[in-house]
Image (tube, rainbow, N blue to C red; front, side, top):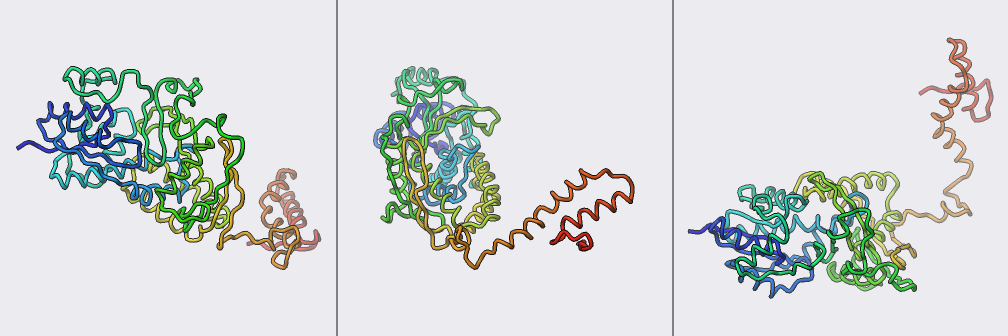
Length: 431
């Protein structure tokens, strides 16, 4: 009986080559699994291509709703980024793909899962760790780590030699990955960091800021417990909301990032990412947090957000640390409810106002016309105590240390300066 292998199949060049390669090297039946994350794809043509190149079966699993609610929203609630610029568009998708592959392998009673991630990239780490966490008994096959093919040209020649359909031409350009959250571009002029990206020929979701209209676009986003739930007062599900913001953001040149990043495997790589809707949501969510979170919670959440970004980027989604960080983030979102209006104009986002029933902003305190909750005179004692370490250090630097007598003189000077009336006879209290 032939062994069964589940293949993560995108319909691109790599996974199209992998089907005949697996059959030749493993004498197996292949169940191709396509995961629909909202990417632009002709699924009918892709399924036909998988069968034409030798797969026994090919299914498409629609996980857009799960992707948004279980993977994108946790990252958004944390405002998690990787190296300050990357919105984790590929990183959040890979653990879900791994989960779908494991479920398919169990259903097919397959003993192995194969994927087309290269031996230089991050995705091999994300796929492998996800599969290991969910199904440690399954074999993982990554042909790029073992076969003799070295380039796209080799892959095209491999298919042509076997008279199999080639899903791309030799002239096709950038290496891309897309889903409903983002699209990434790598290759060509981007491989030299000294080159400016050719945005006009590259962009798929957006226009360049220079080509965006001069007139601004306003949009109001409603949040409940950190999750976006409405646009301009209209309730929307997560998938529809992101797609609508992608159009608005893309038309205004929002969310284009040129990044040189540190890959998990150690090398630096460069890519251009389009995340129009996600960039708007991160901005609006953070504006609402500024209104609703106290200073200490917000400050610590920034540390947790950075760590969570690193954890997600590194493929560690199914780990106790990721779960603990997400639990902390969720606890901070209990009061992050309200509406934020933003202005979009030629690649820039700015705030146009925010409201929340849990706002910590109090006009009677913050206004120049101070109410009963704040007394200006209270500031004097606060500043004296808050700045006491600064005062003591300054006095020590001014006075030479010349024995016990001099030290006593410094102490007296410090007590004099710290006393409310500056009375030399008043005595400080240690403690």
